[in-house]
Amino acid sequence: MVGVDGSPLSGRAVGYAFEEAAVRRAPLVAVHARADVPEGPRDPLAVGLAGWREKYPDVAVHPVTVREKPRPALLDHSATARLLVVGSRGLGGFRGLLLGSTSQALMHHARCPVMIVRPTGKETP
Image (tube, rainbow, N blue to C red; front, side, top):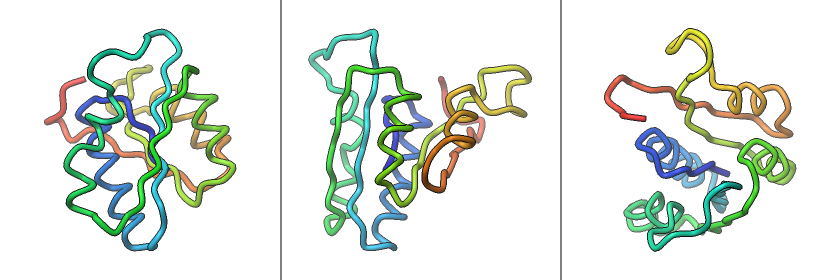
């Protein structure tokens, strides 16, 4: 499973998630959760998955869009996942040293292993 928010860092997380799904020969559930914004003309989930499906044609992708805050949505979906991949911008506390609050919650409360993709310095939030 991968959390998708449309950011460049999320794009890197999607890449890692596709690679893991391909290696494990597992389907990939891509979750976009956002409680405060209605769907617009450019769906962040479709944009976030663009190109990856062609690169990994053998990975079955199940896109899920929910109107809910990301933390509870991803925690709920972690119950049926073998791995959860998310990006972390580390916007809390000492930027670059700490994980963001959502990543912290997922790391401690997800019901599956969690892979957290950190910034390389090339992404823009």
